[in-house]
Image (cartoon, rainbow, N blue to C red; front, top):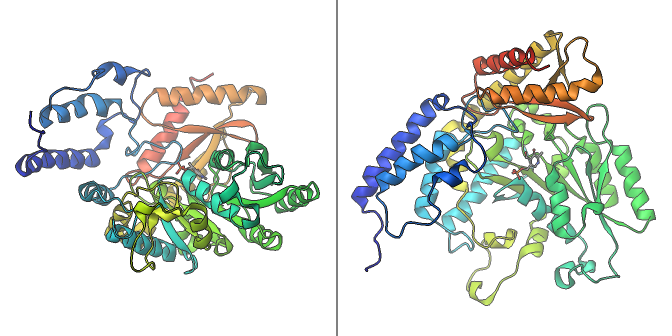
Length: 480
Ligand code: PLP
């Protein structure tokens, strides 16, 4: 049998039109789907054949199955009633960029294997850097997620100490190595722990620094922990400060932390994965004060900058150390001639690199800086409005400041003791999500169970936010 040809250009046009039509309809009215599917785990596993087809199937049948099997079994992140975790948006312009990325199918491991992808990544991240008011000395590279970004940043931090010879000699079986410690607040994201697990610092190497009443890292406690580690012969390596914690969007005092890092010669990584985007607003730029002193900084356009998954922007003032951590060139990847160009494979673990910059370039160009600012500003307005509704309701209690687009609160009906509130609110969340009308998530604030409403989808309007609170109130009357 001769090899199966791909779709002909005519077939591609035909099916491509139906796909684009489907996407346009989806973006026009995502609300025709429930935000959360009503399914048991394994439903899709049972709905599709266990083995692959021997012969190619018609594209029309595949697309029909996409609508029949995939779409109903999807949690719709692109739905305006998705307000869980950090809600995001796959916007039309980003989707077009993503589609063209697939068409070009570039693997930008070396400059010459993807000149446009390599250079557009630098240009686009430099635009974003300017939008955030970060220094021109920051070198940006795109990774898949903030979790990879922090892993890479802390691997670069390890290269602040070439005398440890970790790159060459590794860490196992080495009694000559000191224990290494990294520092973050007790509210930092679990990706800090995962990076420590992966890089050989271990979970025991992560110092969770106490927070103040606003859930921000306490810099005195940080300084004390560093001092105590030095006394014990532990090597303090890096501090991870968070601008916008996952749980309550608290902002660590980066300027003071930067001062401590400079005095102690520690690497400073700033995790601004979600809230960093707010720094594009002049009135919110203060949240990034001190970040100009970071060795590395991460913001995720795939969280709140209207760019489809996945796209994490990692900046560093020490690209030389990032390269030292990851550059490893086998003979088959050597390049003759000029060595001036950036080869993206030198800045992370993956050799292959998707052309992720294209969708971000499309998004920034199609909205413009002012367009993006007005979207982010509107989300912040909605969150503040929601905060006032919650504050005005005697049965609701806000659990944290809401300076970005996420509001954390709980239901506190009269007569219910503190000990009963966690279970009450957990049941409430189950009812709210069980309605499948909206999707919220939860957290714990100083140990107490709380609900989160995270506004981040481009289609989420005031009416959706009002309705979300109405649904919480409706279900709260049934949750006891
Ligand atoms: N850092 C913070 C503050 C986060 O909130 C999150 C995820 O929500 C992450 C890091 C991890 O992001 P990613 O999913 O891109 O790895």
